[in-house]
Image (cartoon, rainbow, N blue to C red):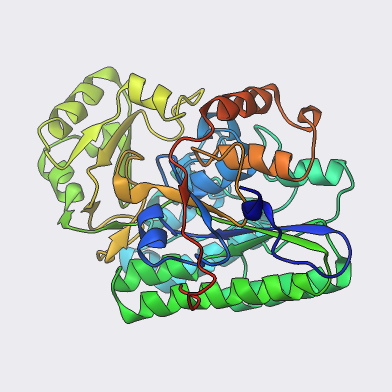
Length: 427
């Protein structure tokens, strides 16, 4: 349909592609609220990865699964040395001095400074006493070149081709990021801009789906995106807008004190290490005997399951070593580990469940009809390559193969909205 390919902007010179990632804008949520339906008429449900934004965003920006780009959860088991090794002497402190927010904030500040960490960095409620046995994964800003050791990201390719682009990164507020992107569009005239909006994710966690605060956060995201588009339209002859997400958000239905279950089981704590995420628990047994014991404790629990080797292969989690966990127990959708190392209380909604959960689906919303719409968040990278006219030599052999696969599957699960020219803008 030719009218679907009409660009948003018609003034100025040149073309710009605006890529906006709205964190936690799930497919169902975006459709229910007809988010920017007048601007983004071509809408696609997209499968995500197992895990959190720490896994999904590197996948989006590289086109690779976690087993390749090596980013999954924020914390993994330390090797010989980690950015937290220096915290070992703190173990001898009394718990009241060691395990409090002041000490944790000081440790975070010193670690970030000593190791020049530019990525998103938060210790949450991880016990200070166990930090020396962990390493932090996102040490570099994901929205910049050189962020991934296992592969290149889109910014590596743009930089190597000397293509002008702007990326807001993750720091500061959504309002600041959009204003900065608008200023960059005006002053630098980049060929493309990547904008990250995170406040909807926070609102959904704290207030839930139907709260006024969440509706206002979604509306604010829409207003900011419209403002960015309006600025670009004044400067470019063609403005194409693409809004997408890293994952959806699932309503929390039940909470389970998995830590107490493990403690009461009688397992010898000195024979294993464990990290309690909100939607999973990851274990590192010291020997095969305790591994079997842990699996026997977890197997009867009806609110989750242990990932099999086949599960890991399907989900792109076949890491070369077990730094992210030898036993991974994943909670059922809507069920949370509470308390966990990332929070002592339950949010209203959460992500990080199995990708098969209907609420977990991400979305891709486009101002133009796509010949090869994405079906998985890893396909976004291939889309960036195609949209910006970068030939496959700037990407990996896997990306070339994935481009062909997407073309073969094109046309599935496409949703085109009715014309919205007579409607008032809806968020």
